[in-house]
Length: 168
Image (cartoon, rainbow, N blue to C red):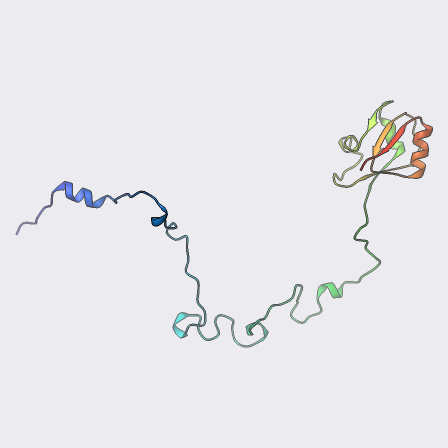
């Protein structure tokens, strides 16, 4: 018996998938992108029956268990073993300090700003406010802008003929 051969047109038409217009009614997520939720405690054949993957007995197998932050299984936690000394002010401000003696490198009449001090490497931390201290003598007349000044720094700047301005 001879095999029946179908016409080429019909076979080609059925092999190519038919494209339809994309609309809200036929949208589907990509294959493999959505996973079925694991349902625990649904019988012995589900792999997660009886104890539902929590193991046998003990505190962690009970309903509503949640361990607190820093829990070490009953051992004395690290934050309680560490010695505590002194007082830490949560509202304290840490300044980056610059002494007046260091500012003698700037030419006469220069306006010294926090950005200029950071650019010249007098201050390393970018986020810290800058305080000018009165250590040493100021030999040049400068206009100094900073976040804070010590009383002796203010006196020495005015004696040198310069000005100071507190930046907010």
